[in-house]
Length: 327
Image 1 (spheres, rainbow, N blue to C red):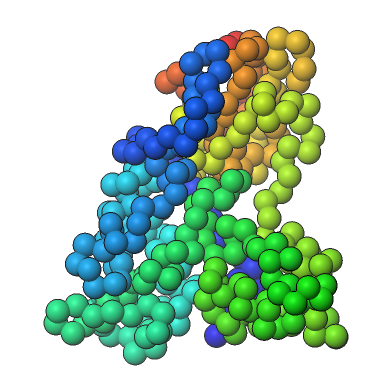
Image 2 (cartoon, rainbow, N blue to C red):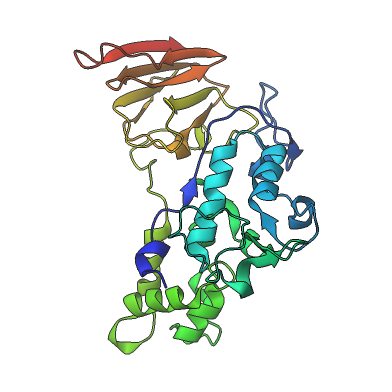
């Protein structure tokens, strides 16, 4: 079984936008610009039903059903990204043995693959490597990280797990409460043992320490604007003005650059620690804005109304590439 480090590793993904099939409304909040801020798009609205992807109705999503089905639902994630998500779930949350690099997903040649959680068979009797409905159900969209799965979509609140109201979680309460999101009991037991200390119980402060390891950094801590003025999205929202990018790096973070958002009242907020959870930016339409940028990495930049700023910063190693755009 894998170590606790697997569970506590980063399990989230983001990808470049190339369009979107679905446009599903979840609200009616419209500002003066006519922009509906409460409309979700594609995966931002949630994942499609398991049965809608299970084309052969065998109770298992193989890699083709998963990748092509989700891409048809929302193609702002590319095929490779969906494939990586599939691989992560298979390799990290099942007992599938990936030591043999020559094995195909559906060749049926791996006897170590976990029968109970993840295994089906095709008409010829071969093992189908894929996700059953339980494993598919651990996928979600995290507000800060984009597509996520398992506990990185958020852990339950302490009071939800404390069934007897004692103020402490024993091993059974913790594991049973987490199992639906992370269906590997041995890893959950390792996590419990790590955080519970010598008394074998988790209090709320110990549980909060565990939750902090799963959460995103508070990148707004140094901001002068509220979320009503500037909103960030990891997935393409209905309304946005800027799309940040980092070359061909779908999982970008730690940019070499800085961007100032200056509103018409002279209030400034600065980004200097970029990550893909800030890919799309919505700015309050009631104000005018100046975007001041400074790039010291060759392939970073942003797009506004189809116009690209940066991305070809050829002289960045001599002096930062600087500029400004007014909206």
